[in-house]
Length: 389
Ligand code: PLP
Picture (cartoon, helix red, strand yellow):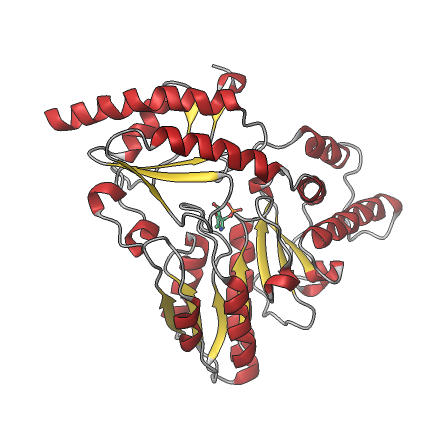
């Protein structure tokens, strides 16, 4: 089967590179291979392309100045640069008076991992819980954001259930306590209007491969005046991140941001697909929709089905040429409930039978119809198998 025949409905996992993005990148994978740090013509061509891309990303993120954008290798690196960089900088500047890191219980593993690493090295960590719809209680959180907090990191929108967090309110609470506020906007970029200044973020992460640019490039918005300890030493990116720039990837990210900004109306089309999908799926007995009913990404829906394993459902749909995802799988291949659903207090029986469907560039009504046609049979078959075991 060629990718052309697939119904790819897993855009929260990754997205195809758009032809316009590839076109913009190609010269920098061919003749224009200069190092942007080189002073001669070939290097300066690359430098110009990097700076044009920086201006595009800055405009997409509502930054006041292109120099507020630091290019990274991925969303995970942006998260680590923001959180570890802010924490270690606070240790240098505040001499241990700001040892607290505040985060939510539903963050991506990139954030969870660096927060845990800081905890092991002496940070005091406060984790904000969420309600049954995956929403952080901003008022309760404000009470936990104290004047010993160095950095608060709460994602803009959740990658599994899509719930959109009250980041403006959290950012405001941080400002009043002198703490920095970071938001992981990897999933909201290209799906929601994104304006770092309106959100009040000091630091904001995005990733190329979630917005139709290639894998291996990301960016961190760093509000002017915010200082971060270096996590990758070196002199590139104005001494903020070492490593020769991924020129082609950066150009691709710039092109993808420009396209995403131009096509903001795209979200309405995806929301219509989502409505149809939910209407159809919820007719299946023993199914439910997870996440917030209204504060949710327009492109995705997350379901639970009683009496089956989500991993097996993904495999069954793959046989029909449909790509979707379940919760994270453990090494045995059986699904374990995701930390997000656990934090939302989901019943374990339902949490293991989960399915995430996410739309994006290239999704058509025919793809949605194909899933709606295949799903009831696949669910029924797996329930039969499960009951017989
Ligand atoms: N943050 C969120 C919310 C994500 O969904 C992901 C990827 O799934 C990441 C961070 C990591 O991004 P990357 O794959 O570019 O490292």
